[in-house]
Amino acid sequence: MKHSQLLTVFVLCSLAVSCGKKQNSIDADALIAKTEKQLNLLLGEAEKANRIPRTLNAEREIHWTMESFDWTEGFFPGSCWYLYQHTQNDLWKKSAEKFQAQYESHKYSINNHDLGFIFNCSYGHGYKLTQNPSFKEVMITAADSLITRFNPEVGCIKSWDVDRGWQSQRGWKFPVIVDNMMNLELLFEVSKLTNNSKYADIAIRHANTTLKNHFRTDNSSYHVVDYDPETGEVRSKQTAQGHSHESSWARGQAWGLYGFTLCYRYTQNPAYLELAEKIARFIVEHKNLPDDKIPYWDFDAPSIPEEPRDASAAAIMVSALLELDSYSEQSYTSTIEQMLSSLASPSYTSGDGENKGFVLDHSVGSIPHGAEIDVPLNYADYYYLEALSRYKNQY
Ligand code: GLY
Image 1 (cartoon, helix red, strand yellow):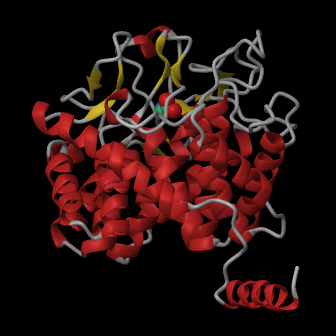
Image 2: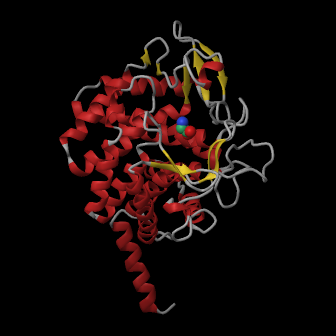
Image 3: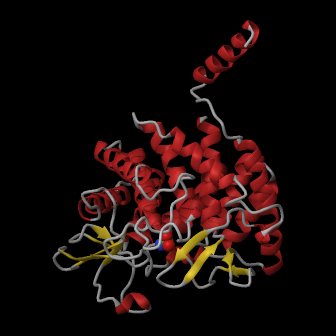
């Protein structure tokens, strides 16, 4: 390299360091632009049907979210908010507002724990971008509904009701799933919005109980811990969406990683950071994590390497690792860049105009339920877009 070229590299590196940014090998702007092009197509389909897209069915037709209540309904509007944040194009703001309004009344729902997923990813993100006071009201109402499910004896929010559906056939009394960590962000946000610590206090109790009971000695997590609602005793540790009770369901590990990282963001409690780092180590160093860093649907799936991958788990993991990287002494850069470049490759990203406009393919909803296997999922796209956005800000 010539002296002048070396000088240019040195100046660029110094500039990156002085801006607090790291060197990067991923062109996040180009990938966000590509994502926008695909989601524009999906938006056209959503507009025609006036419904929120969730996935593709076996015929590769769009499967829409259930109008009565659907844990994934917030992700498509949430992706629209990310695109509005990046493009300032009013189309994305109007689309987010239109589609999130379809489920606003679910803020009163008290028979499901998924309110954090639904309302924080859409109304919560929208509130940060617009300060629209009506969005704040929706978040507060949703948080008030969510905390009705908190049991002080157990120290957790109940995930699933057990009086109906397949959950009623498992003998559980008070099931708590690791996914529930994701609903705590809504509670922390609403505590800040209302200046009332009661929401954050419940989030912290839930996180502490989960930290105590959900994790194995190798730092992997169970999917479901069932509690006695009278005494708070643990009744059983099982799975619902993983391969077996003692296996490590990939998306569950992703939810735990993301959940404890976000708890550290709001509390600065080093126990949460330490657990997030341990979960990250479990994932990153696992013998069954493939070279392209996109996990199989369960780290212990019986027929690896002939098992489906789960791009949704990878998208959640990489978004969480990006946040963890900003707090931790460890560096996760090489895993982050490998995961992002794999997701962005034709192995996982739809070709232009393919898959009705979903961005990522090859995710898994629930193999034990025979549902959504090797398909696009709206939450895979949402967390991928979030990861690209975090990468763009940090690198
Ligand atoms: N409960 C959300 C999931 O399937 O990961």
